[in-house]
Image 1 (cartoon, one colour):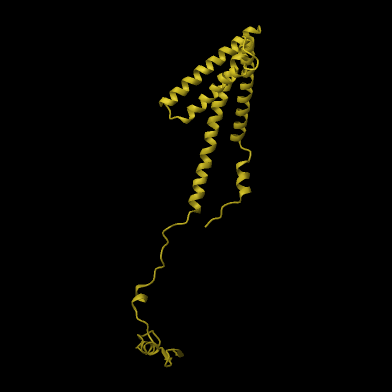
Image 2 (cartoon, rainbow, N blue to C red; image 1 turned 45 degrees about the vertical axis):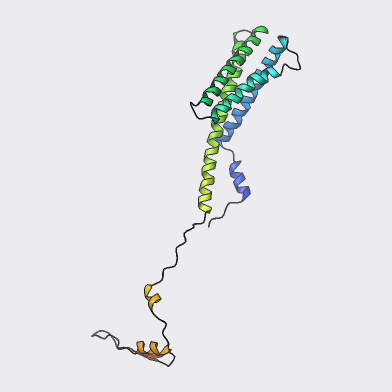
Length: 213
């Protein structure tokens, strides 16, 4: 029965630097920074449009938070189901609203075409980064689940254990005492032209004393 590897060995294999983990970290950081840029633009846009400063942060949280939440929801529903279409419609509408808000803020601050592209690209970058992060998380959980199943199969003890097979002749023969063993030993030995004569002498208890050829 194979032994389960120590805990530190399993954690070392999990925390070992891999391209998948690096891509996951990078996509997570990109999503965070894109959310920060879009949050600042929508927050300032709300303040400039007579929303109180204490409540202005709720506007980007509601819009960009709905973008992230709807993207995550699409991964939890079966594809082309009612819930999947609903979540897809939500993240499309919320993304368009976020893009429009960022473009309007760039226009209000007097930005040119480059500024419009930068601010409009932040919600789209958030969308792509979150989607990529979900894909990487899905790829990370599949091999781990497969390795756990293999380890459980290796560590499982078989229920059906084969019983030792014995000769039927040994089970059918009755126990013999010393006199019967002596009679069997005294039986004539097959002889032939090339077979030597063999004589065995036994005592009363059936123990062999002398072996003559």
